[in-house]
Image (cartoon, rainbow, N blue to C red; front, side, top):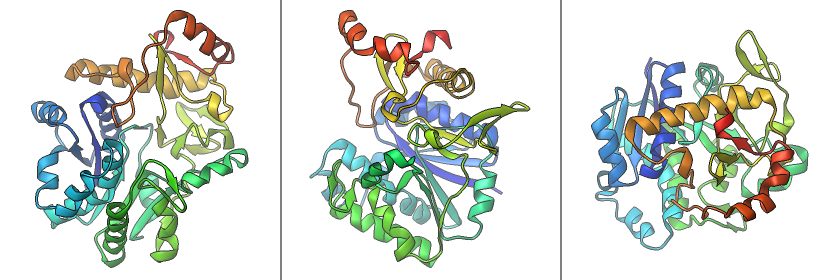
Length: 328
């Protein structure tokens, strides 16, 4: 059975997106990934690569004839427009591919450590599936940004699945800003309403799905027989959100923000494979990678001077909250 996925990124995220795709194919050989290319450079690079089961979608093709989407594009920032596109992408693919029964949106900064089949087994025939953030108790206040995360979303081509996508698209076209406004935040907080509005919406329970810095505090990470485990569940994918370069060869994985410390197991089994894969993808396409980790908007901070770095980050280094990519 072909497993159909979609995502989006631009050329600044190219090496990370390719690392995600390669990890997905490694653990799900039947995976097919559509990539909405948010820049012409990204589309050109993916077209030249011509990777099997990766289908690049040009932004102009995606936008063509969609007046409401183009109207929204004109009145919001780049990152807000990217968020606005999220529900429109699965709908576009359903319309372009009449034989497509189910589509799963995944963020480009995921990395797969195991087969996603346990997630699909859990979802079963549900028309919609969403993933909770699973914040620890001390971080429950972060649910103001959304109880659920956009990292993995599955939709089935049926009445409820399509109705949900249409409703979500309408809301994002109306308002999709990169700040909290009541019960709205970007494309994400709308997901909080899915379970009530659309019966049959499944909330994914697998602990190994969407493991991230924001929920690691809930769990114990271990290894047995070469398998990375979260509590007793296999880690399926980790969400590498919020990585920031703070100095040459030094990455902040946002652990200090969540009160976490980097263990040797995390370095060896989570971050080393990811950084190596991103570096390999960077070399393959000659595109920005680890040395220019940025938000999808393309933003990034300037390189701090040595004295500024020492003052700002020396404490985090000693508390094992930063990563030296050179030491991995």
